[in-house]
Image 1 (cartoon, rainbow, N blue to C red):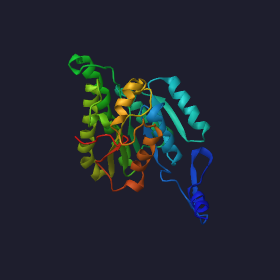
Image 2: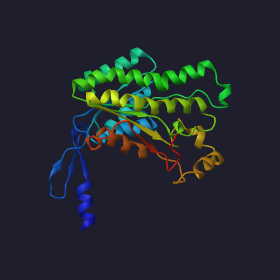
Image 3: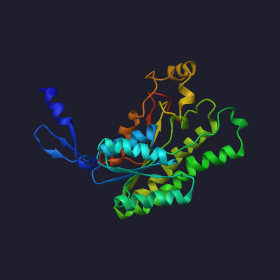
Image 4: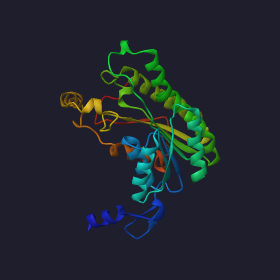
Length: 282
């Protein structure tokens, strides 16, 4: 009886347009936690970003996904729409001001505003001894991973104010706490995002905008493949974890949906680590 009741409680049935209704044990219909919200997710056609976009849409949000390549956007939009989810997509290179502006304007034009921003875009053009990194490497990493994230926040804040508030999640990395081998500049940029979250949160609280951070560990994505495709390297990295395996993108998405929901209304300025028990203290 208990198992049957739990099954009925957690069953979710899709509705037209990707909206979802949750059935309770007494037949009471409760709207999904992000219903009526508009979410904007950068770098969301693959990996962690795509998993986040899917989860936000499953939880009722209308989601604008983005990527640097049109074919990737088209593929992801088609995939999510085939699952009955309410998504649209646009090309965006977050390092370009005109692309950032078009991204935000597209969300307003298609969905009427912005309630949620998930800043997920990042680059890593360097692998090796940190002292061998060049000016160009540092400029690119800091421009895309840190400065662009802040400038995108700056663009969405007025749109969130128009809707009475909002939620921002900045995707950093556990490398911001403990640098990954041969990824020194990238790791530094992720440490900066931990600080950006702390700095933004108190400034945006009076505007009813919460700012939190996700710090994934070693997750199975194309972006991190250099770290996990080699078995000996993977074994070395996972040995120190409490959960001795690589993570999956979907294991990050629920945390983001929670942070963007009313369930997290008393949480701001925090970093949630999804890293299998990896070290997460500066």
